[in-house]
Image (cartoon, rainbow, N blue to C red; front, side, top):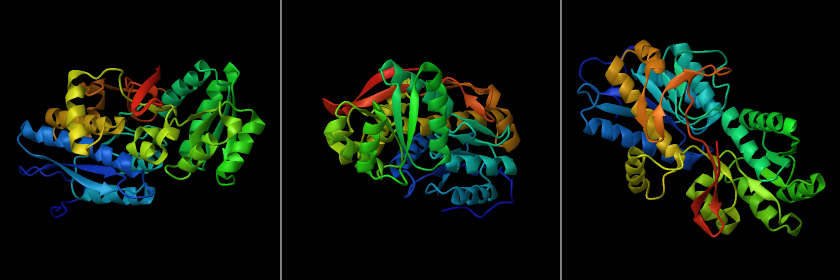
Length: 370
């Protein structure tokens, strides 16, 4: 239960809990599986911080709000959490939602560590209040484009829905592939059925189809239809945004969902901390943790270190981003300013292209690293 609201901008100093606002998609149309994994990582890290004595003897507490992938709902939650006196904000998976959170956090002077939203333009202008753990979309999707070329694919089709995020991804792919002889054809999924997508792929002589669409609809019907079209037995289906990472993908598609490469932000081999956290997350989730769960854990690890070292004052937390040095589950985390980005960015996030092994769909194969 929430404690009574404190004055706007105030952070309790009476020995009560140090509070972090957690923004997570937990209901549709949000990507619920991603939200569940993100929250599991956040909660596990909070438990471990408190088992180790908390923040200068004060317990760390998450105040969780469901964004449901709604930017307006998320912005309202930021206002509420600021009034409740949280020291910082954490989380979010959907880029359009994280962008709304970042804008409101910047306006209120509230530190926000974005866990898992990759859109380059997370803020309209540079800000000291926002830092990010996941790699910017331009980096990850350029690595994915390099994978496509290395695998012999230069005629790419993208099945896309209207979205700032999908449009940005398409632009990154086209800009990176065009100088290397690659082409990108856009298929508007507001206008095409899965069967019409198959016809368009034949017409364009595409060798790869990328799913820049929501999951499970319309991603799952598209995959099923393409897999069953005898004209397209050689086409590669890809999903750079990571839809096949979660167990629901394999449950819904079975063998059809294997061999669909996607971006994953994990190292080839976990460090001892990562391996220990992986085991704890597996027990908490009752399934293999996704990279999103590790992002959640690392988010709290960074914020806890900032709180221990610099206290609960919001301005001091934001000022600490360039001085952070935390051993995370996926490597040492340090933030820097990256040209073209308006937020403090962890530049060392590991990036892989992986897929589910057709011979064993529960197992992931690393296809490319960047």
